[in-house]
Amino acid sequence: MADQLLHQQNDDAPLATSKQRDAIQRAKGSVPEATGTQITARAVTINRPVAEVYAHFRDFANLPGFMENVERIDVLDQRRSHWVVKAPAGGTVEWDARITEEVEHRLLAWTSEEGAEVPNSGRVEFHDAGARGTVVVATILYDPPGGVIGKLIAKMFQREPAIQARRDLRRLKQLLETGEIATPAMNRQQYEEMGL
Image (cartoon, rainbow, N blue to C red; front, top):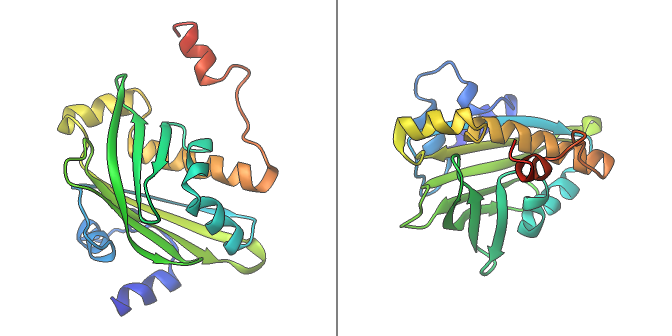
C-alpha cells in the first residue's frame, strides 16, 4: 500500500492509463471492498483549492448538478447513499453505495451494496497542485449491465462510464472555475423532448 501511495504521489495519471497489465488488480488493491471487472479512470486539474473541490464533491447533493446521467442521489446517512442513474438504452438503474474510506481533502472510496443493478466501486483522489489548483483523479470499477453487449450499447448512447467520467470531470471543472456549465444551444432535455 505504501508503494502505491508513493507511486500516486509521483504520478497523477489514473491507473487505467497504466501500460502495466495489472491495472485492474492494482485498482482493486487501492479500493477497499472493490467490486467490478471493468476499469475506467480520468483526471482533471481544477483551478480551485483542494478543500473547496473536496467539499463540493463530498456534498452528494451537488453531484447531479455536474454528473449528466445521475438523476438523483438520496443521502441515507453519513456513509450511505441511494443512486438513481439513467440507463444506456432508456430507463434507470439504482443502487445503494457505501463509503469505505475517507480522508478529508484527500480521497473518497466507495462500493455498491449487494444487489446493485450495476455493481461498482472506486475512489476519487484530490491532490494539491499548488498554484494550478487541484488534480482530481477518479478511478471506477464496474460491471456493465448486460455484459459486453450492454457495454457496446452504452458506448453507442454515449453513456459508457469511461465517456461519462471524462465529461463529468470536465463539467465539474467548468462549474467550479466559472460558476456555470457550458451547454449547447439546446440542452439534452430539449433534444429528448423533441424526440431527437
